[in-house]
Amino acid sequence: MSDEDRLLKLEADIAQLHAYMEQKAINIAGTADIFGRKFSVPVDAEHKATVFNFYALADCHNPHMRGFWAATFGFFSSFFSTFAAAPLMAYIKKPESLDLTKSDIGNSNIASVAGTIGMRLISGWLCEKFGARRAFFGILMLAVPGIIGIAFTQSASGFIICRFIIGLGLASFVTCQVWCSQLFNKSIVGAANATAGGWGNLGGGITNLVMPYIMLAFLNATDEDEDLSWRLCYIVPLAMHLLGGAFVLSGRDLPDGNFSELESSGAKQKAKSNVAVKLGISNINAWILLVTYGFCFGVELTMTNVAALYFYRYHGISPQKAGTFAACFGLMNLFARSWGGIISDTMNKRFGMRGRLWAMWIAQVTEGAFCVIMGLATIKYETPDSGLAKVISLFEHDGEKYSLLPSHEDYLVVGCGSVDIPAPGAFLLYPHPGGVPNASLAIEEGTSGYDLGKRVIVADILNDDCIRNNDLIGLVLFIMIMFSTCVQMAEGLHFGVVPYVSRPALGIVSGMVGAGGNAGAVLTLWTIFKQVDRTDTGFMILGGVIIGTSFLQWLIYFPDAGGMFFKAGSLNYDPQRIKPPEGYRGADALDYSNVTVGESKGEVSTTTQAAVA
Image 1: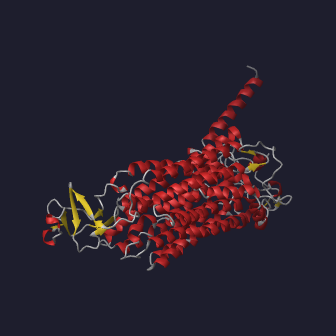
Image 2: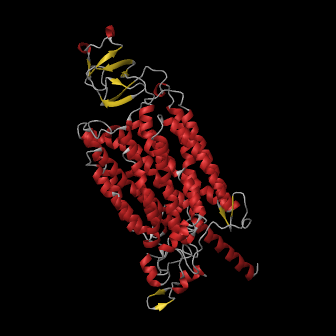
Image 3: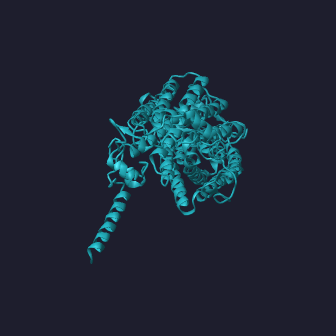
């Protein structure tokens, strides 16, 4: 072998070693930012991370993976706090607490997502002006007064106002997605955005899962004081917001530094947020994605609000079990939204932008179909909302049926209804001997063989037409999991497209699309679930709307990448109606040739120069 051949082989081996180490998320090239700070993960010429895998996820160094984890936890915290009330509603709505009506509950659900519509639009502007990191911190702190206030409120109106304030924290989704889009290369941004957003959304599932058990812990600590216990539960989301804010501040605005130092160095243009606003609102693709995202992320917000109470009321299970089943919807975020992002990136590699769009539409249509099927599964059975007369509430213990004493406030329950109550001190065998309830025949709780525990569910257990008495919960849960998986995948697929819509207005477009998600939730809660008599009827209507609006995605078109039915350049049409000014760059676009570090202009670290070259 000649020396030249040996050299070529050595170069090939080194290239192979570099590729291997980069897949292990190791910056073997030693690339550093303009100030000489070495990156932890491999980066491209713009210093955006090029690897997002299990090895990268094990890292938490600034700026890339610190930003990812801070964005994920911060958004998780806001999701957790916004929907903390949902699994506790069985206690909060009771007369001895806030005495909430069905209308009050519906209004509080709407309030929890309504304020974020405007806040998400504002947050897009804040990202352009101040950077996603500082905007993120401000939004997390904005929700804190609501978290504190809800623990002390004494009225339905106060409860609704506090849920509105807490819900403003959901605008952190925009800052989460903008931040990740500015830290990760476009080849992997779909997966990075989807994972950060999905694991953030996971807060909705976790809050449904754990808050009922936190409630049980406080019930034990307060001697079954339900009103005090649910208020104490809000200590948890308060702590999460404070920790999340500190974590976010520890990150870095962009890979090379924070806005202020980059502007001082000459690498970054001064923010012109008014230009970004004009570009964002004049892009037709952004408006289409705004609408369709309203019927995937908006659907998730809706389900997070209604699912726990749906399982509790319609299927007659305890608040703890209802919370666990409702949590399954949000828990799909553990993997499904990431799947959407990964599929988006994969389809992009094989088919370009057209592949991203087709995958997004297929996921959205399938989501709508499962939503319809979930409603169809129970629609022929009776519910507590069917207007049936009240009946004697019963519970079962060791194969026998029992009723409460006639003097108990829950002796009667609405037909097909159920109520979770503290274990009664005394109860009667059912059917009542002689057909008449006789208090003198009462069995005292604690009598040998009659230990009921601390709480029981009393219900209409004799009507065979009730949903709760037909063992449908397993079927409904399976359908809901499939439905949720498609919802989360559609969300991830949407934000695989968003970074391509308008780079100079990335924050504005992200804010618009994110606001669409909340607008969809408000529209769904107000026009569907607040108007229908039955929740499962609402599921069927919602599914039809999801399928119908998904066809708007057929209209998305990129002049340089095409659309679902048209190739790039085949249409004389540009969705960007207002063009960016000449020389205008986005908030994350840096000019390394104009950098001044220290005293001499253009003094950039050698590893940065190599990366740019």
